[in-house]
Length: 158
Image 1 (cartoon, rainbow, N blue to C red):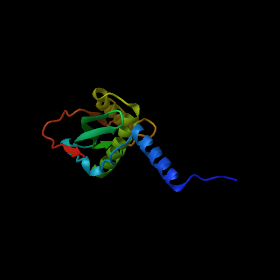
Image 2 (image 1 turned 135 degrees about the vertical axis):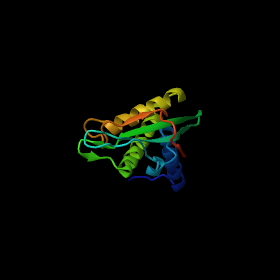
Image 3 (image 1 turned 90 degrees about the horizontal axis):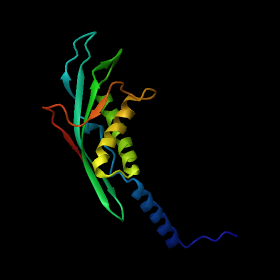
Image 4 (image 1 turned 180 degrees about the horizontal axis):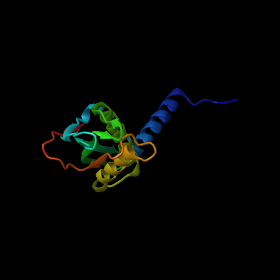
C-alpha cells in the first residue's frame, strides 16, 4: 500500500523544487527578436561584396538566490553578413536567431555561477559560438562583441 503525503506537503515540496531549480538558473524572460534591430553599416555591393549589419542591445543578466543577488548589464553588438555564399541573411532571420542564441547563452551563463565581471564576457562567447557553430550554427561569420559601431541606437532588455 502506497501512502500519499497530505496535499499541503505536496504543494510545499513542489514549490520547494521549483524554487531550488530557479536558484540554479532563473532567467527573467525570453529575449524578444524585436530587441535586435539590425542596421546596415556596410552596404552590399554585388556578387563579390559582402555587406554587414549590426544590432546593439543592453541586456541585464540577473540571478536571485537566498544567499545573494547578482546582476550584470552587458552591452551586446551582434554583427551578421548581408549574404554568405548564396544565402541572404534577412533582418527577420537574424533577429530570431540572435534572440534564440541570447536566451540559450543567458541560461548557460547563469548556471555557471560566474562573477558579474566575467558574466558578460562568457555571455558574448557563448552567444557567438551558438550563432556560428560549424555544424548547426545558423549564421556563419556572425560576431558578438561589446558595442563597437557608433551611430546605432541600442535597445534595452528588460
